[in-house]
Image 1 (spheres, chains in turn orange, yellow):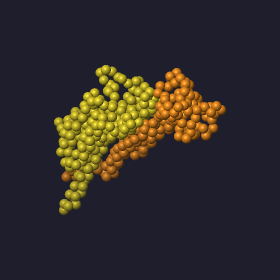
Image 2 (cartoon, chains in turn red, blue):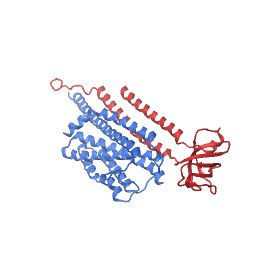
Image 3 (cartoon, chains in turn red, blue):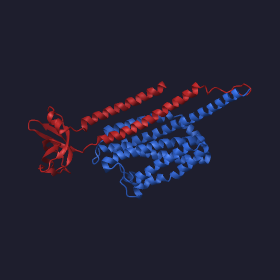
Image 4 (cartoon, one colour):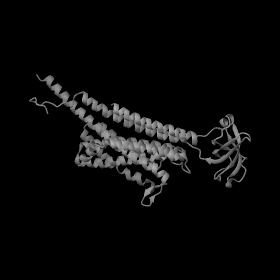
Length: 170
Length: 241
């Protein structure tokens, strides 16, 4: 039984390591910051991702050549955005999108360099968790059952050779 | 002959388990961290690396059940019967997981958890057939008779396999056409590597699980038989003057 649990501890350890790496990757490259947090927290130097909606009647500039200014709103909070980057294919007023850029606290402008798709990482996490946990649990339960059966057979001494009618063992 | 092959393969069970763990861990790492997001679907494409291998493995598992059932009806080999029983329960697990992960993927991409799509319906029919198979095995007391009826059901249910495979060609469907065909491979390398690794990992895992489950069924039978003999001997020695 010890060998079984050691093996499974190793598998669990590798799985946890992968989960931690994935979570870190998500925090660094995928998670978005709310506008309220961006405005209230001290200025951050690294690029951040914010999610919001282009306010109606504020979109100006040459969108097809990747230059635009607009108001970006998220509930109560709103901020001015100056976009300079790849051409924006689907941008329009009232469009929800994720902007990648830096907050210029002196000019009070969010300088965006790129856009990203709105990530639904919850769905990805749910699909992986359900599959890995169900399969892992099934394999573990089966391996444990084999061990229990072997132990049961061994302990009940059912493997002992049986004596025939003359008393000779098989 | 098949009996000998199964016994030979059983000796390398650990290799299958180890290979499955390695492929799945490397596949998970590439699928979750190293591969790029899709242009249209973004991060959601990562669900494919778990959904598609699960679906492939469930059809593979049913194929094992199908051919095993034919062999059992022909040769009446109890080891093959055990293997079929093991394949059915594991196939049910893989089919359920494929349907659940597909549903999770469908919600953000198709905006619905379920739709009457030919492939979804044919896959659900597969799960119902497997449910029937498992119930039949439990309900019929006579093991040999139960095995025979279940084998017939599995063979008849085999008609669902080509329907699942070609549903995307025969009917209008939300699923994409076949990616591997005589026309070539229509998947980018970035996606193909984690998908292939996860698929191989799931196939090896299925093989490992079938071996362990077959072993459980064999050991349970052995225990029951030995206990039965032990009890009958005890009973005999107690009742005989």
